[in-house]
Every structure is written in C-alpha cells, then in structure tokens.
Image (cartoon, rainbow, N blue to C red):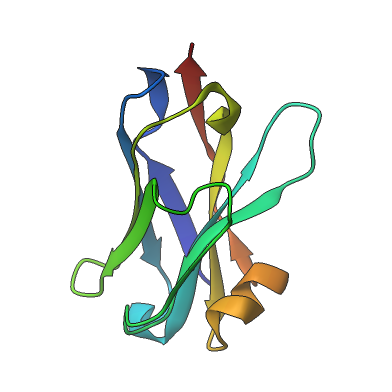
Amino acid sequence: QVQLVESGGGLVQAGGSLRLSCAASGRTFSSLTMGWFRQAPGKEREFVAAISWSGGTTRYADSVKGRFTVSRDNAKNTVYLQMNSLKSEDTAVYYCAARSYGTTYDLKLAPNYWGQGTQVTVDS
C-alpha cells in the first residue's frame, strides 16, 4: 500500500505561481511512477503531469505544457508540481497519483494510488 499526502494548495492571483508537493510512504518511492491529476467543479478528473521513477521522462497535458513542471526528489520521497502563469481555468482540486512500475503513459491511464487532494484557486 502507498500513502500520498499533498500540500501547497491555496489561493493565488491569475499569472501567479504555486508549488504543490506530494509526500509518499509505504513503498519504495523509486519504484513508483508519479503524477498529478485535477478535477474542477462539475468536470471529470483529468490528467495533468507524470514523471518516471528516475525523473528522466515526463509527460504533460497540452493545457499545462510550458507552464507546469513536474519533478521528484527520491531522497525525500516527494514529487512536486511547479505551476506558473496560472489561469482561472487551472482552478481545481489537484490529486497526487502513483503507479507501481509502468510508464508515464500507464500512470495517465490507470494510477494505482491517490492522495486526498489539495485545492488550488486562481482568482482572476
């Protein structure tokens, strides 16, 4: 079993930045492909970004490419999502996700584990 705990959400002005963190426990972190999803009110949960166990491969949704950066620190069992140039349409609950082994594409399709979510609100 893997436990995921997100932090770093909050209220930010449009054009601003936030960094989300997700701390993982319960399994060897370096064996996990990690990523982020989000769910806006009235919408389905959607993929945002993913990163391979080594950090060498990343994948992004088209809507966040060039603005968001996913990274990880295997020594700290933590994955990050740096969000810049935030827009009102980025407002959502952001969920950390993990998959035991597999590619970033596999995580996009079917994560094994979820965090509880953290709210990000972008005020325009």
